[in-house]
Length: 249
Image (cartoon, rainbow, N blue to C red; front, side):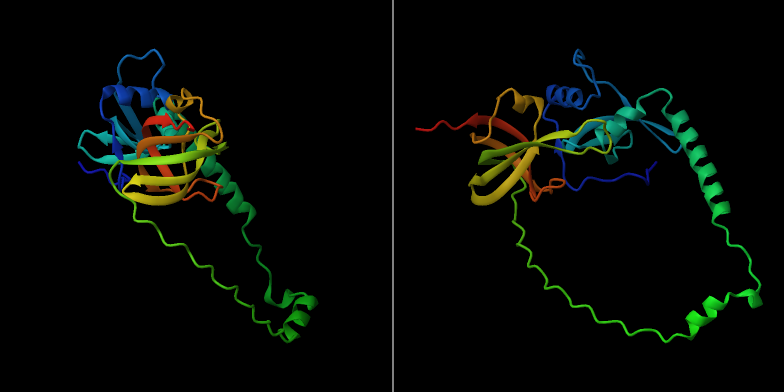
């Protein structure tokens, strides 16, 4: 059976092994810190209750799940976590009933009142008699030239960057904001390519390095075109590995 609701990922990173899968699920809060192995998850929506496995990620805020028919689907980890609650389907039904009741009340409140044709107010007739004022043409603002998009490599590459800022961005699916790192002087070392600025999630793995603003680091990763919310940073560093600080000579 084909699921029509799925959002297929254009590109995504599969987990290299069960250990990486387990660590990522713990970071998303889908498994407890004491969990020794993963489990079967369930996708619940529109009366469906489908078993699925977490097979990879597009980025730290987008998990990729696979159903029994091998179809892939992108989903926010916090949304998937909510679905694991035993009463999730019941909460959806209650919310839908409340929304239907509100819509009906608003429709009644906004229903137009019939008015007889010859009961139009004098002010309305006077307004119709006035000649419309000519609108002044608006001056068009000059178009800003967009910077050409970089042709990013699809495979993992070696990179070097300097930590510019630690910050957070809103997460609409969670009570907590997402922690991120913004880097400057970002470039690929092989093949040589300047990126400029980029960002990555500030994962528990990176926190162990105790990075500070101004630290220059080398690492291996995949880099993709993905803008950071509320920041002028157009590229994202996915799953940086083998990260090392560069010590000044």
